[in-house]
Image (cartoon, rainbow, N blue to C red; front, side, top):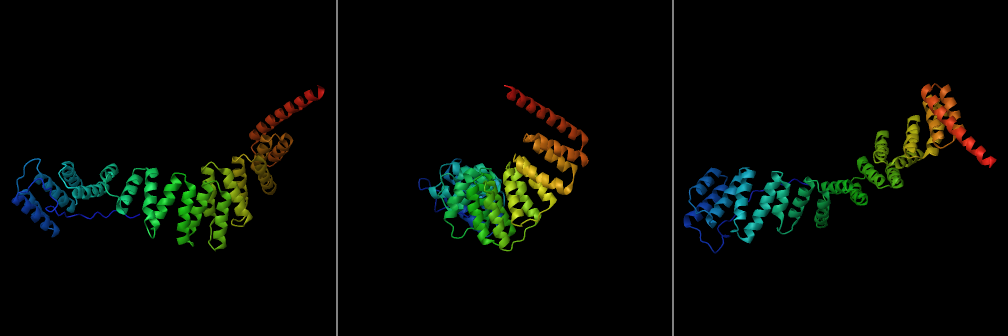
Length: 364
């Protein structure tokens, strides 16, 4: 999305004067002289011409002087002063409809330059809609953090564009994603991907949006397609997508995505990735799958912590004997003795309670 290039307007002041009031010849000459001097860049001469005439307070002549001074100081880069002068002229109620429309648009541009976005929107009220106006309103709402207001206007603006600039596509992706409109974000991201089929980031962003939408299978399919096309992924690139699921409170998606990556050889199997997969299953409360992963890890690594994790998972499922066996292996492998004893004590107590309950039921 482009930045606003604020072109300074030099107004034809005399032709637009309201017919109900006459302008004194000396005032008219001052306005014309100032306009000519401004067009040639002689700002001092323009200021002198406007300051040399006397006008009646509240008259049209005073309003036109304010207006001319407003555009003159804008040309010199004094945006806030220009706003004050043009706003006074606008609020006088003595300008023609054409002048009002012109000044409202330029006051909006000036307000944008000084980052007064609420004022931008106020000045644009009642101004005839155009691409320029739509673009300015979109950016003002965006700057105010109101993407819900900006998006409908952006969609309206883009309907009139024959070719959409990539910065607009990126805005539509980001804004929709921010509002959790993931299907719409994917729509725009696919357009970016069509333009940049060899860019890793374009594929990653589409996969990330699909994952955020609760579609890990689609995310995996996107990554596989990129892989088949010859896009090279680093482990860290794929790890970002897995981490995204964890921070989005969707560890089950991360687990499914990681399983798919390993299955389709997008990532090479390693103990670290196996442990990551086990942790994701555990976070997702898929205890059987987590236990299976930790059992495999423990058998291959022989680490006490792996056996201890397996024991906790077995105990959490009420598999007391399996848990006690894993605790014995953890103790033998050098796991923290205090933790082993705490879990063993708890498992034995629960096992004893279950056996007592079973005995009571059998005696009835």
